[in-house]
Image (cartoon, rainbow, N blue to C red):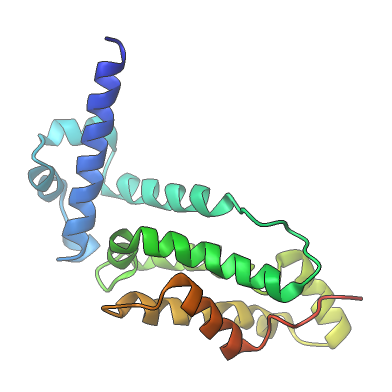
Length: 192
C-alpha cells in the first residue's frame, strides 16, 4: 500500500518528461511554458511544481540522467588495444543515443537549449579519443598545442549532429566504423 503514491509520482514524472520532449520537438525551449507542459501531460500546474521548480530544473533532470547513464562505462579504462578501447567508447554512446533517439533528437535539435547542448557535448565527447589526463602527455611528447588536441574529440560531436538529423541513421555499429575510419585516430598510441 505504501508504494502506491510512489508509483503515481513516477507515472506523473514520466508524463511530464514525455510532454516536455514532445513539445521540444515542436517549439523552442524558450517558448515552452509550464502551462504547455502541464496541458500536454494532462496534469495541473501545481502537480508540475511538485516535481520541478521550473522548466530549467526539468531540463537539468535530463542532463543529470544522461550524465549518470553515460558514466556507467561498461569497458575497462585501460585495454591492450587502443582501437578496441575507442571503439567500445563510441559504441556505448551510440547504443545509448539509439535507445533514446526521440529524447536525443528533441534535446539536441534546433529547438533545444543551446547552453544545455554545449554542456552535454563537452561532457559526452571530451574523452572520446584522448582522456583528460593524457592531453598533457600528447602536448609534451608531440609538441601539439592543447587547443588542437581537444579539437580531435569535438569532431565526434559534429558526426553526432549529422547522425541525429538522419531519418534512418546508421546503427551504432556502423557509425563506430565510420567515425574510426574518418579520424584514423583509434590507432594513435598514447605511450611515453
